[in-house]
Image 1 (cartoon, rainbow, N blue to C red):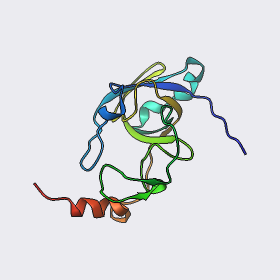
Image 2 (cartoon, helix red, strand yellow):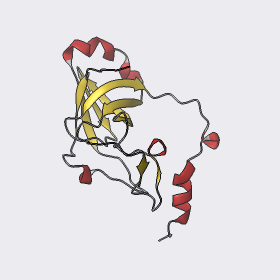
Image 3 (cartoon, rainbow, N blue to C red):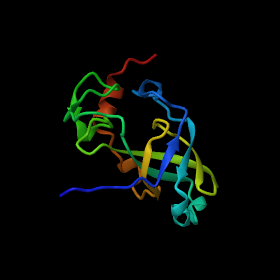
Image 4 (cartoon, rainbow, N blue to C red):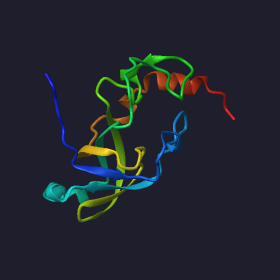
Length: 151
């Protein structure tokens, strides 16, 4: 089975190189950016202003190769790629939660971008979570944070 997707728009981001994107323990994604949606999809943005946060599905379009074991910058131990946010995945799909600042026609001004400028956007969905914080588990990341020396 082959799946093909057509981007609905592009990300405008301050990041032009992967090294510029904050990574690792304590990394905070506060950068502002714009989700530029193709005009033919503008009707799909109706009522999006009512949501504070959005899921953005996008493509790691500048990555070559697949690695099933990843060495994330936040740990000194390897993990399966599906337990990480590594870009070298069998399907190079990224997922980011951003905060919606404003909608200006086909442009969504957001904060929290961690994508490169020009990244293709596959889809946008409102962020909704019914998982209470006390039920969330952070897996190996919590263990890595616990091993991290305190300053």
